[in-house]
Image 1 (tube, helix red, strand yellow):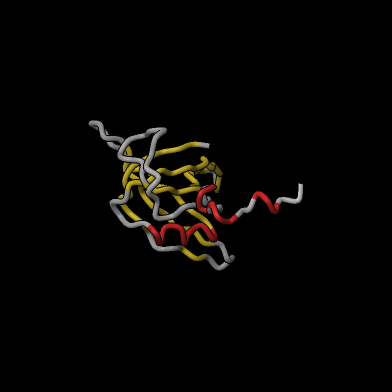
Image 2 (image 1 turned 90 degrees about the horizontal axis):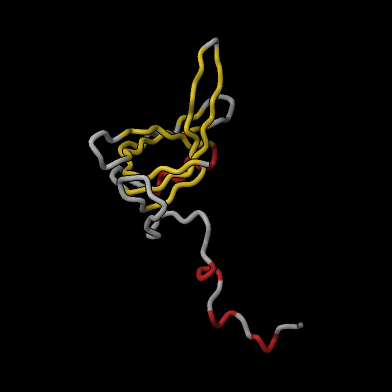
Length: 124
């Protein structure tokens, strides 16, 4: 698992293929230093819609895997995003903002409200 943080520079349209496969690419600019890097990531299948909740210029934290393959004697590398969160600033960091337009997993507070449970009614 790898992570990168930065600002979304470009979000492309979803590409649909005759086989039923779909992918969507986006570019994130990382680093605040002298040499910022533009990294192209891709999301596939049902994850493509995740990008609808973001716009160019948004700060994000990207969790991704590196995928490599060979085709006709040439080798290709793809950065395959499996989780995208808002926040993150412009540089790689372990700390990021929890203010996310898309939450991939609800927090415990989202799932439970104080009045949801009555301890007197627990059967054990």
